[in-house]
Length: 379
Image 1 (cartoon, rainbow, N blue to C red):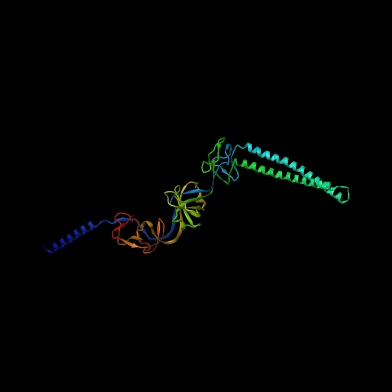
Image 2 (cartoon, rainbow, N blue to C red; image 1 turned 45 degrees about the horizontal axis):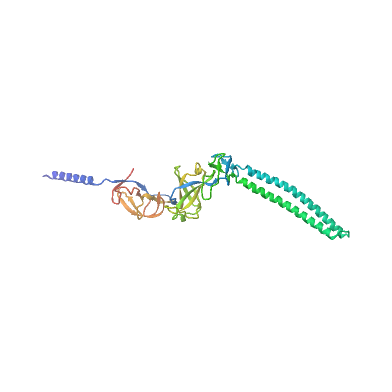
């Protein structure tokens, strides 16, 4: 065999061996890559169960006494003002009592005027008799005593008549209070949400301990709050005035003009559920309150701590014991430990162990994604 043929044979063997080697090499796994960059990271506390949009005030209204609905002055959706009469049960007999008591006061005033005039005359007579007695006129001591006693008695009758007038005014108040029990008035400016009675229908107040439908459900929707239960473990970290975001199933955008306005002073315990503390958030931006209705389901995210411009990575890229997979320039996956800072469901702050612009693997749960393997970034 000539040298030339031998050289050609060696080259063929090398080509075949190299082809076999490369064909046997596993294909690089495709991974989702995130380049480490700077940005905001917030540490948040969120509700454990769904929250609710609530009106700042709500009143379930019903008359204090039962009776037939004589006047129903509102419909669902009506806007009413504080003190406005919404409904009234039949009360003609009670109104007649008010008129009777007011007429009785007029009679007592006339009687009091007469009694006081007689008292004033008796007092003048007593003064004249006393004066005659002092000037030596023939007036017996008994006559003086009788005149003074009569004046005092008439004065007492005058005072009694005036007291009877005051009693009459008190009776009028009692009669008017009875009428008030038959009317339902708006305790604040609001919107009628529900009307559960009909004209001429008989209504009765709820018995003690038994809740029935209110005659009228009144809402003040001039301001709205979002109330949500926070786990008892997270609740101590929340303070009044903290910033908060609100997420609603009915709308896609997150609303972040909220502030914590109330933290319940007790832990709510419900059977088969975790113990929670009710927290309320109020949105301040008018555009974020538009189109909100009481009863919408909502979630809150209270911002406990915040970093405005810090290194961050996706939280989904973090493995146990603060480990990451880095895709290096050679296309190999390498494991790296890092020191985390604050975090939320989306991002985790990086204090050390990773540099800006490094490629972090986000799809760590994918089959074949592990340290030492070849990988390529998904396009």
